[in-house]
Image (cartoon, rainbow, N blue to C red; front, side):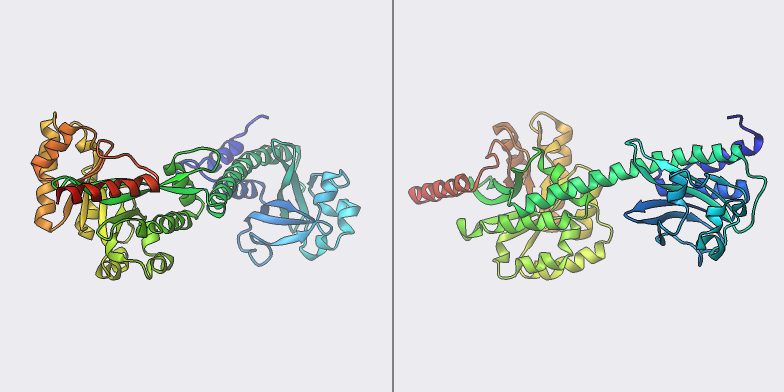
Length: 421
């Protein structure tokens, strides 16, 4: 197609910068506005066929919102679409009065429709999604084949954008179904990683970590990320926390369980209800460094009654980035967990020791207890102990383990204490 100056301006109008990966709505809406203006018509829309109806998905009709708006629908028996697809009406009608079939339809007079141009939106799999359409109340003899070709180009553009969004929506639906299935079919299990008092040489708590038997096999972070993306983040976290806390009676009364919770879960009513009747002095809530906190005041308000009841708060990944420092300053946690990036090779790296020392001093000054994560060697543990770290966890001290092995760990520790006594 030869591109005139007007058409060049038309293409540039829909290609506005600054949207990044725009959703179909943004691109298609601009295309509708551009082609309606270019053709001098009053209404442009994209419709979707659903059953026996056509539903308006995007509309550009300035001043005519009472006539047509997004979400409105019409019976396919009452509009031109089926007749155009079947070839009984042409895609281009500069003057509907020249088409007996169009003139016989009530909608032509009710709207009214004097000029009409409509092309099908064909998806890559061959389906007809709906129509890309422009209309005017008065006839427009200037409309010609070149305008129809332009409409087809932009119907193809709409098809591309719509197909991309449909694929994204389908992927989201599949993620949602996977998460719901994992919850409904109890495909979540909990493993427990011991947290040791390094001076006393005994475990004092356990971090509860989720594992998934559901397919496809994927790491826990992927499951929780997909749950958050599909609006099921709180539901999945609550299912995991509820399961983890059922293990409380399995451990000595002076042993706590630490559960991971996002700010969104903590402020939910369902989270508070889940904790009713539990020994709150044996529960620690961990907020990770990567958790986004949009409103610290609201989070503090939600945490206050929980902390007054005995629940302790831990901030994870201290030293990993700015967010963890913000969590610490804003929330004043009871426990600060030293990020494994600082713990790793701390016995060999003076810079790591210096930063860890500063964080340990900060914890001491603010009345918090420091827990070192990711301890993997005796040398790392000894260095941390010499720096003043009180508690630690990591593969050297114990890998995450199922409930029975965790119970056995405390049985051995109790038996050892009795022998020493």
